[in-house]
Each structure stands twice: as structure tokens, then as C-alpha cells.
Length: 380
Image 1 (cartoon, rainbow, N blue to C red):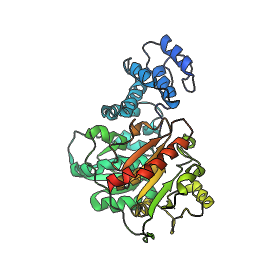
Image 2: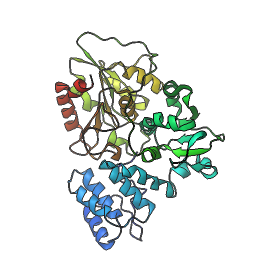
Image 3: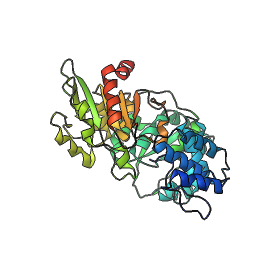
Image 4: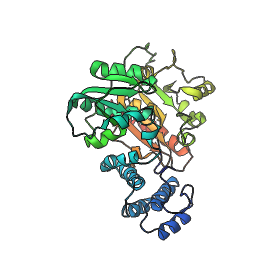
């Protein structure tokens, strides 16, 4: 995942130093010296948004009106368009594939891209095979599953590449309708065409109708005392992600909602941060443990709602249609847009920090929403 602009695109195309970590004043000066280059203004918009300065929108608008003659410029505009809810940004996002060091070069499937033709969405594939390649993390893979139903209708043999923890859920959801391939497989995969997962929104042009996934339902049922809500919580993402320290939160920040007497909390956290739950004896740890996403889906499906930070848990809950409160950093990822709802998942309510790095206001808003229960009522 990335913020509004990432260090890989945050550079000028002259001899100027990299724009990363420049002050707003410095970025404005660079923008004046390079009147045709939109990159200083895109980074200015990014910096201002990180600090809650509403003038970031003026900088983004000014940037979009400058020349876009390189892949990095088109990419910067694309993610800004998506942030604003302009679906055209998804098509322009293919500019990410034309820069050195991008996913095409880093993916273990790079060989496929040299030997096979990329699907443009126009060619009839009803008698051909299509390899769908993931680009980033588990959450990105899950998000693009929204396009699997229409893809299954127009492709003769879909071949879905998945990470190992997604295999049991993918096998349950898609069954024999598509072939599954592990992401880290080293052998050659025969396929007529390939497509990167993040290119699917641009190919289809809009989100397909939402149909919630059905979980495998293999886990034992959780107790449901009468009059009590059952809630799941996840407070941290994958620590290897570059900006995990900003999207994840200390579990202690959630203490105000953990103390609510009408709610039983269940930990959905996996990985190194799962032990944080030991600090709260009333926070129930899953038994048996959550080994893969099928396990997590089974537990989620039994809950009244989920509270999570921006990680794969949010995407899984959204795909299942479980009422979800998503806690976001102030400059949340461009995929979530600027509103408190998202067309990707009707059951998700977005809650952002009011000050970068300060989760207090977000948890306070969460508490208010739990008092009012609007999301729970809408989804019920």
C-alpha cells in the first residue's frame, strides 16, 4: 500500500533533489522553478494533507493541470483521481507498469510478462486462459476479488494467483471455477494471457454489484450470551509494510471501547502483535488459533461487527458484509477516498484521525457510533 505519493514517484525530473520530506515552503519554491512539472505540487498536496491543511486540494488541482508526459506523472494523477472518487484514475493507474523497479520487475512472475501478452480487457477470452497476478499484500488481493464474478463469465480458464494463507478461502469461494496458483511458486505457468489485479477496475470500468462472500463455516460456534454484542478487533497490520507504524495503533488506545459492558470482544489479530491481547484478560483470543483467512472469515461471520485498522482484516470483513468500523490515519490510503463510506464495501464505515498520529479522536468517534449504532442498524 502507499500514501498519496510514495518515495518512488516523489522525485523531480531535473537535477533537483528528491522531494521526499521537503517542507511546504521548499516544495512551493521548486514548483515555481519548474512550472511544467506537476510532481512538486503533488508532493505538496501530500504533505499538506498529512497535516490536515485543507489547501492540499488546491495544490492537487494545480498539479493536475500541468504536463503529464511521463509514467510517474500519470501515476501521481491517477491516485489523486482515485482519491477523489474519479474511476478514470484506475485506467490511468496502469502507468505504474512502465517505470523501472515497479511490480513487473519485482514480481516472481516477471518472466510471464515477457513471454505472454497482457490482457487489455477487449480480447475475447472465452476459449483462453488468463493468469491473474497479485501486486501487493493480502488486502489488495481480497479487494480485487470483487471482480472475480464478472471475470469468471468472460474467461474460459481463470488462473488466480494467491498467497498461501488465502488458499483455503479462495478454494471455498471459487471452487472449480478457477485454478489456484501459489504466489511463490517457481515453476512456469502456462497461460494465454495475464493481467495484474489492480488493472481489473480500469478494465471493467465500474464496480460490479456487491454480493457478500459466504464463509466456509468450519469453526465451532462462539458463545452468544443474550443481550450482548459480539465484536472482533484488529489493531495492527503487517509490520514489514513501510508505513505500518502510521496505520497500526497501540492496543491501549482501544481501552475505552474494551471497557464497554455490553460488548464481548474477540481478537482477530495475527502475527507478532497478537500477544498484545494478553494485556486485556476480557479480550477473547480465538480457539483454535486463526491460521488462514478461511479461519478468520468463519469467526468474523459470527460477529455483530468488527473494528480494525487499515489491513487485510478490513477487506475481508467488507467482502463478508460484516458491519465494520475502519480506523484510518489522517492521510488515509487513496483507495478509501475522502468520505466516511466506500463503494467497495457497503458495510464499512470509515473513521479518520483528526490529527496525524493521534488515535484519541478516532476512538472517541467510534465510541459515539457504538452508542448510536447507525451502522449496525443499516446492515441488519
